[in-house]
Length: 392
Image (spheres, rainbow, N blue to C red):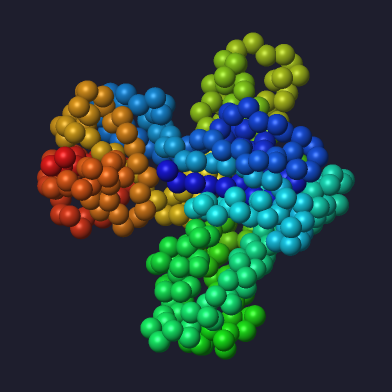
């Protein structure tokens, strides 16, 4: 399962975002370090279900009339403060918890209502643009410190006649979530001495920064967009590559209202319908959320997750079935399973995503949409329905 981490300074709204996205019961408070240990839960990326091409909807609990929700792991870690890489706040613990994340949603207080330490201030008093590069720099410094601590060992290894610097660096960096391929790709674009004793601090910093950029891509969640001063969202968009205006509080209110049966709303919808009895005060609150949704095409919570999964991590959703005619599993359930796989994945990769034994016994695959056998190097596309034939 893909793993996405929520990061940001205290009081930016990470825990509210997490609660809204997972409907998990966590502590939400307006003070630093509300979150001590990482909260881990399941959220969902939203896509169109292939059952929309059928006469009936599928049997999955994760499909709502053709809106398919595919599980991803989401976790919220302690707030980050300046100097975290040196151990300030809960910095080292925070950064260690990011090791296994495939990507990071950086939650920024777009309203500028918290200072750089995460302490509450008046709306607009702090410039949120200052926070955009904050986490990247802390992570770069943290990774650099890891490289520095281990560099003496690299230099000792270099005295061996069969020393391979690429292999030595891969062995060191796989412990922080990098693969051999990641390290090799970064080193291909890095101008560095073959002799580790000739490396400078700048070489080590650049290695760490490039590796972070490759293995921990980020999307900026411009939270509190509903109260952000005019121009803040636009300036954030100028400062970061991908920015999603968000009201996590608004999303949480909608999900709670939907659970209570007073509105009809699915996560990621651009609007909702009031279906139950609400007080005048509740109606006004819901209408304020609707006004924000009209401006940003939703609350931004679902959009942020979808963006990081499908655009930044470049994954597609594939649906394995056993019956290619009815699109069912062995029990007759229609499209019960959905798997997120990286773009460029093959049917055999999907087989392994289902189960390692299925992958080991892979024979061939069939495109269930047209009933034709597909090649082993066929690249899966969003919404593919695939019958995997396996000897196991």
